[in-house]
Image (cartoon, rainbow, N blue to C red):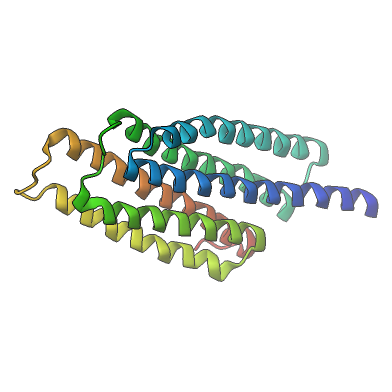
Length: 216
């Protein structure tokens, strides 16, 4: 019985590590997507778009493993909660990869032109940095199950929300000089970064619930 439990625990640990690995893939993806959108780097944008397929495959394989563990081990109580929560976290992380993919697609669409006007470069650089910080911290939260850090992720998201509001305010100003098409691109980009961060918050909240049994 002890051996069976040890094997099961190894499987649970493997699921947790795979979730951490997924956050690493997503953090690299959003960093590269941000660089691509700010520098009109077509090759980097194409790399992010291609990598999204790998993220999707990794997530699908992880979900299949989790379902297989549930079917074989028939876990109960906290073990079942951990596996069901892992399924939900993997879905959030996959969506974060999709947001990076969408950012890269706008960079590719507008190449060789820059999708982001020069005066908004710093704002999107800040949004990219905020997104990277949030997903990096989320990976630590998953690996450590640190509930205090899980709450920090939600507070970090406040900075992304502030930047998003500032962007929208800029786009609706009467003196906006870059046309409707550019405004639409930037509205979409802002939404992608904002949703990226929201999914990270969702993951961290799930970890908090997993550890405490309470909603953050």
